[in-house]
Image (tube, rainbow, N blue to C red; front, side, top):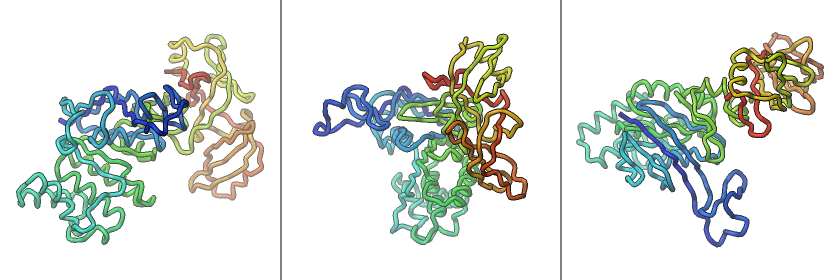
Length: 387
């Protein structure tokens, strides 16, 4: 079993006294960092139960606390407060080497003077495993990762993708309870990233361990994770399956962060007509879908000004509706991304590519959308009013 449990984890980096001033009082924020009388708060109230063999992805912008959280699980950062359990055992004060976890870093962290075989065998030698056991485990991992032909090479003789395979191999030879990966693909080019994502998916099927994966790349999060944890400014914004996060974002930040191109936002009014909820936006009026009606009614949501969110793929060219003018047309192969100006704001819609020139630029168009694809967010709290 490889269950990992984090309970109200918090990380505070103390502020050096000489840099403190009267402005650094409880609740003050510098950029996206909160300053308290204890110091800089990097992670706040982080609670998460990770099941055995689950693949969890922590995703968010730079500086949101995801790597710090991972390093606290690894034991590379001290936990300021809260509790960490691995397989039910309290781990806060356990040394990293005794946690039975392995970590893959962004920069590979391979020993340049060692061969691939020696790099992969190193941790087993430290554990004083027998020569036969080391050889068996290294060659098993090399076969899984398709690097058997490189075992006698030095890291400098390998490509970036091959080095990352070696780094992963070095981690999995120990059969750890949990495999932690900190932005392992960020140094690779786009093609290699796609290949390595597929390799990680295959690897997950072949080794029985729990994965905790950190990335700022939402594509990695959506394709790899059983569940994803969206973070911002040290706080968890939403924990759900990738599909649930995409279909039902909990707040404005999640809605804008997950999805490429990002969700479009409009100033709108949520209205009640004959007991049903409608959204009025830029002269268009759309009744929300039945399942949305039920959730809004269950929450006793009142009429109010809202932020309306509609994804680019859910906006349609229509005979009448939201008025906009096309300013940019991007051919993306089978589709075309149209950038429009709507009431002074940039809006993106995705339309099929017709195979022609697609000369939309300068055209005045109208946009429509279905009530099942509309998301309404509170102006005051930025929360999705359905939840």
